[in-house]
Image (cartoon, rainbow, N blue to C red; front, top):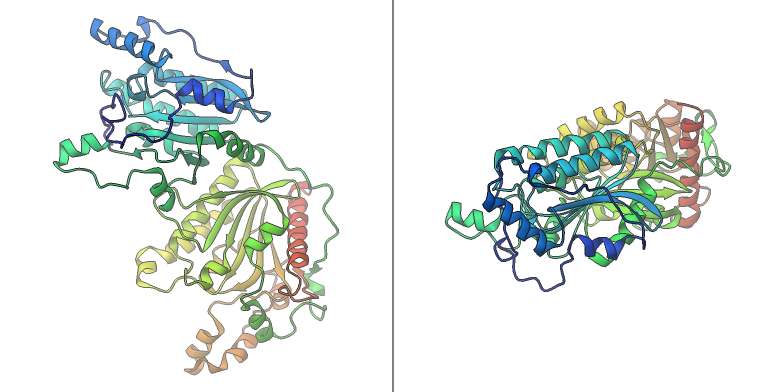
Length: 509
């Protein structure tokens, strides 16, 4: 990895002239922290903090401090956002382009370690051109120390939120700026690895326009959302409310409407015929995961993509409050798939990101299965679809947090299997699971898709069959088909999910 020279102003950064007001570090704090809550953690810096600095560099530092109103390129401390206690590391671009030298790096490491010790969520609001060129390699390797401290913070099950401000480039973006559980960006911000000016100097041509822009990073699944400076407090507060230690709502779980596996056969609202159930789950008006969240989640914070340059609409990854219990919800979106946006490898990589967040923050994981099958294309094959299914299975079986998988409707093939291995599996009364679409199985055995109804019955795909086989632990009857009472259906499913989480948490399983 290499770093870029820190730009001294926005023009040098290759950014277009800003059309919006860009807040400095103190302005950002004033705009978003509860009044009077800020407490600085920074000790005064002296020349001794810059060993080997010559008079010219010390003069640069003094001029930068006068210009920026801060003594370094970052300020750190604690404050409150809508009543939530947080630790903050905030970059100041006006101080030598927000560049990170040894003193700034040590200040960041100290703040992250203190946040971990005091069990405070951490927010990093970056604005930096990367490593400080005046200090060279000794400053460059501080990015490793900062990243190590952030990793330890996350390993302590503490939230880490990142706000990527204009501009964030170089080693900052390539280390601790890209490690957030939730990462959002300032509108129009220049965000990238290599600064445009350096790129043009090295390559002899301008960097392509529109690539290193916050909005493009959202489209590419690298950043979760674009957030205005004035909206940061609201987004941070919602995220903190969901990410902090909280397993409430488990002592007052409504009475379950599900039936145990042994009692599923013959229960009203549990499919007696496999093909009839399949036809019901394929209805375009059957409720899906978006309906489930809309009708039963008190709050939802969406996460976007893999953070590795991929995003697919076929799978939702969200933080959600279900009856007061914060969960990570992975949901296969039937409507996106019906709109010809199939479940591909990037969707499964997004799912694995959600699994990691659940494990790191000790949150229950809820997987909603509702898919006609994974993407059958050359792109999916070359994108490692089969390998991603395997990795989802491997990741899920290693999780130590409570896990619940929900067969909500269609459960077809490896795409469904990828989210199945939870400790407890719940099925809607008409849900089903099969290795292939029944039409595909019929074609394999009979060289025609016309015997799909027969294959569905032979392959034991119904919820009740899955219960008898021990694959499903509880079946939620659809006494009224889900499309006729979507609200009641969604509430019954969520109540059962909460009951299954409570059984694992309160029962110690």
